[in-house]
Amino acid sequence: MNDLAGDSGQQEGHSPVRLAIVAGAVAAVLAAGAGILYAVFAPSSADTVAAGKADSIFTSAYSGDAARGYDDFNGAGPRPMPVCGDGPGEDCVIDGETFWLSGRKIRLANIDAPNSDKARCPAEAAHARDAADTLAGLLDRQPIEIRAKGRDRYGRLLATIKTPEGDVGRNLIRFKVAVPWYGGKEPDTDWCG
Image (cartoon, rainbow, N blue to C red; front, side, top):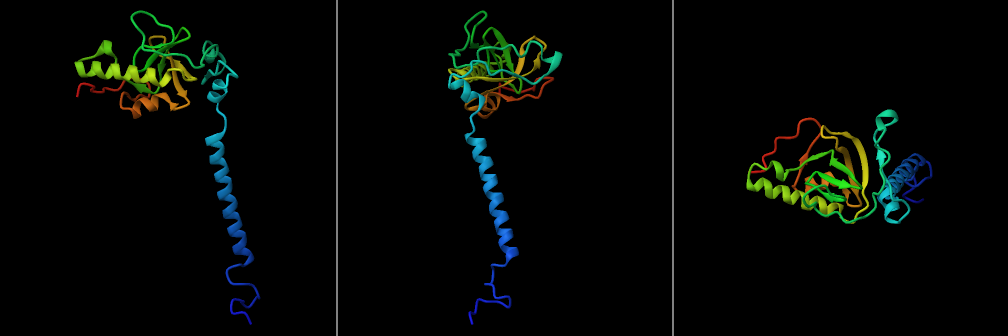
């Protein structure tokens, strides 16, 4: 008699219950893998713009009357985005947290960056230039996805911004030219230190 056979005549380790558990685990792993692959490789709205299928990917975080004036944005396709010169600009970066796009002044809703016009020391002015240059580099010739969050006290559109490289605000924080901002009072960051 085969020494692997048990009392039931089945090979040890291959009971129906054990096989069902293994099959369920394999199915769960495959489903999770498929979800990850979809999340990584599914076409995004930025891909649609890059493919020339749309020139507007503006969406609003608001509905009804609260959204009025936020959903009429056109032109988030790739374009040059240099740092603005003096005076009002068109499609350019004002500072490390604010830019002009198609005649709209937009402020990143999730970060705070140093501003050269409010610099308290030469180091802060240098950080402000770095922040503006970095933002310009992240937006330059990229499809831009905008998610409106409202308006700030200066009337600028507050929005989170994404490009194919990800969330622009998070990238500015990662490059250490900005800090997180959650609305309300701006963080008291010492850029002079």
